[in-house]
Image (cartoon, rainbow, N blue to C red; front, side, top):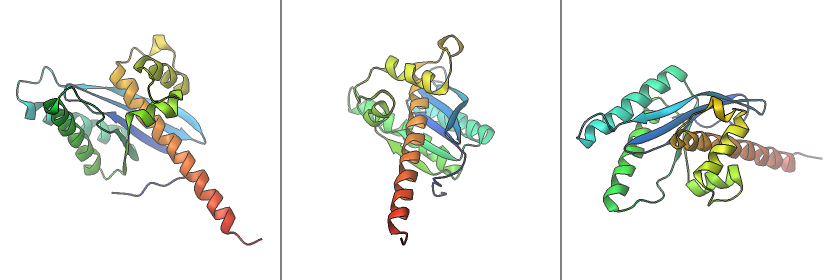
Length: 184
């Protein structure tokens, strides 16, 4: 796995894992300008009744997306809540498959809690999905009519945008520390 570099242009894939719908979105940033590269949802409901078939579809589809779009870094939403233990286990397995696909491509991977993602985009960690989707469109300068995304897709894009925000913050902190150590 490659380390995260904090300067220069970067392309990031954000992933919102799910056992039935895994949202993904790729965003590039050059000189502080954000650009939507591509986005979508891996849907597994029609694959078959075996859960392992669903996991395999998530892996194969993400592998193809990663090979085609070649992002440099990955940001994946952490498992936050589930209705029951069985749901949490399935969600964790879907997340693990997404992590494995990114790791197989040698991407540095960062995890973000859903509340941090929401707070970094909307200003509150308890924001509704529609508020997050609105801010994603706003930050990427995409009109609602041009983006009939599923909420899983906007959540994935939000994870990518959160990661880019955290990268900029880390770069500024590193620059500040470097300036403090420089001789006068």
